[in-house]
Length: 325
Image 1 (spheres, rainbow, N blue to C red):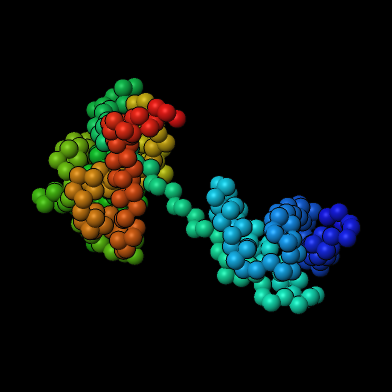
Image 2: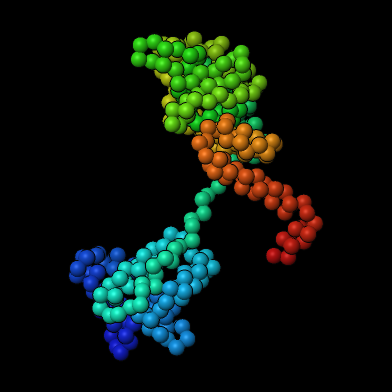
């Protein structure tokens, strides 16, 4: 038995269910122990109710209240969902052995899991990252000029790293190859093919255009057989997303930027900073290539977070409240 043996009807029911899980469903000892802990919480909650109605007499509203109490105590939604699942299974089993008005857990849902906000650099760190060269490297070497052009373009236009590495020097269609993206230097735009094979045009800022021009002046030194790719590795092959990730992380570390920097951080930074300056959610959606405005709205949370930090740092009442903690 997994609960104390005695006259307690709650323990008898819970033991019966756990024994069923052990013998019929053949659950492991570790999984059974997890069920036992979740059911023990249910038993403790029921025993604390006025009149001690017993597990079989608990109703939907009492279970929902208990789930709310767990959430208020800071238990994460995933754990609450697991407990509700264990309790729901118990009541389904109990209904086969005694008369229940209904399964009290049916319709009770765990709180929605909060989506973590995307990480974005401050404007100062983002500009440092894309504009400063690695002090330990030759800033005029082809690989460093390539890095500078890639990083500037990522931040300038909010590209996905896969979109960046798919860029060609210009549009081309020959044999099996057709360009998925390229830079229109005259229009100061980059044309990319994003998710769902949707093509979009995004403006390219002057610093990025200048970095691209510097890279193009030395690109020929790395060029091998394939003349299409805009960005090349030191072996002359098309740049891969993995190489971009490795180079960007090493560059951030060399500059002492205290963040886990990867290409998508520059995309998040682009979106956050443009939205902070313009407030134009639809324009940011279009530039990012989001199919739904809901995907772009998360950056309004980042903007509010920044405003809240400014408020806490600057408002006299906020300062006073914080000092009293």
